[in-house]
Image (cartoon, one colour):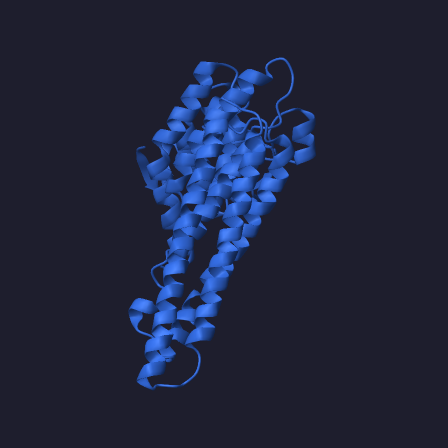
Length: 112
Length: 235
């Protein structure tokens, strides 16, 4: 992973990619690791690392899906992630400042 | 992969491990009683040390038995692929919690017990520091993580259930082994989260790609978890 510049911690290109995806739907509270891999084209190990890092910065929160709901769909419960208010503000500002015009690229299909 | 009564055998093994943990706790508790008192006449001290040596040997044997029992439980979980555990899983989890409780109590009392033995003038070789309780506590934490993975693999029904169950069993087995790199408190969540992700892979290629990338990244993931834990603890 190539580091771009110092942030609250290690700010990498995959971190920015993931943030861009999350910022495309900032109110969404049911992102999960596999879907983020598909949306960004990043590997599961990278996404896991980035999610952990963002959660430890307080930019993301996570919670378990309701087990009864998951069971009714005959699948294991998922770990859901959502941007926190601080995370949304900080990530938005970061991407706007460093990459003007980039915000929302994912929503327009810029990533695989 | 599966064989009849495998789940009952697992619960029986777990109960055996729990009983060993409790017995180990009792032996150690009795060692403190034996070492009590302030008598220092050589004959008393010799007799006391002899009794303590016998009790420590017994504690070591029980600790070894417990270690073997826990290893057998892991092997059995992986061999049976977690299939057929549906009815017994709750019982298994309950017993694992009991083992964890017994070992946590042992660990909490560990220093107190050795301090008491030291205060009573018991020689270092007859104290309890080397029966490896801490390692066994961690093994029980791993066991909880593996059982979380097992639970994630148990909800499949329907036409494609055999394929999904088989994949879930393989994934839970591999994740259960890989998470041993992680600090114990992260293991349960990690296995369950990624077992759930793997459950929605649409094809074999996607499933393999996800699992392989995750396993390849495990050393880096483990390193970052440990670093973050150290930072939080101010280390």
